[in-house]
Image (cartoon, rainbow, N blue to C red):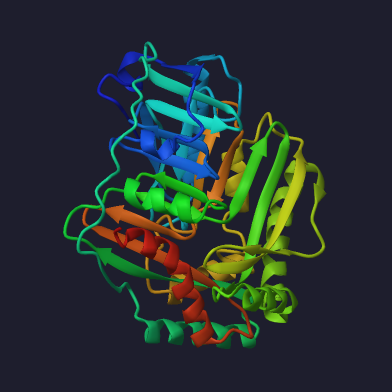
Length: 423
């Protein structure tokens, strides 16, 4: 585990001091337009949520203890901090943003405390400033629209389509002979531009095009995820499970028929049941009561439709188990790993042929009380200079067809691919 802070940061200048004040912010102003280029973070849905920038303190963790090490660091940071919160909403006071590796090895995970966080919830807005010794005065300006990517080119990642379909066929054969019930296999696509990417460009387009998703960015990992791994707020916990997908055609009448087909599909219902069961089983030890709907609904997104189920519960151990620790308990769910999970994740490591890094890992935020929101880093990509690596995954069961799964993965690339493609 490695920790870092600003030059006059926590490690050398004592505890962090956070101050949250109400903010008179025009409802028409996008929070993303407040982001400068300095270490921006975001967590937005339908114009509400959090953005931040700068680094007051951070920790990088790795390996099997990555969640526990980050949780310990956060507990210690919170215990030493001084917080003046005049708003008292979820996401006010001292807040950290995190992104965690999918697998124990390899992978680097991060939890970071921005110097400035701006939030919006309903008709309330606020700004939090964080610094060592004293919270700095906020400096908020609406920024110019970032420069669009130039000369973007796309190429296959670790495996081309033909090779990936052969991996899917291998997985189907293993499922058919009883080795496991389901495995989620992912592939990557690499985008290269003439100039370094400005992450604020794709973030703005994802937020505009996919308002029902959570548009996120933490330490180079960005995307618009439709799947909430876990939200904990004032004793209530919820998790949105997505598994089972069909591509939209753009014709409303045809798409309604496809939605009905998806809702009756035995292959997709089986895949979805595995995912819901894994989430309910992981949350049950932490809840005094739970509600698990008997049947999923169809979630309509601009590019695809998913079978979706919202699992909810009342947490009985909120004083000792944070939202990050709940995310650890849930990760990886059958929606991103498979069933049985140990067998599926071992098969992913054996045959997938690429490093997932932080794709399909938990991403989100947490406040000083342990409340927070953690999504699954889907419809996502990892940015490094001139290069962006896009990810897409598909749930494979006994009835899966490799060509259909390839088409599904291509549909799942669309949000980020379009967001990178310039004006």
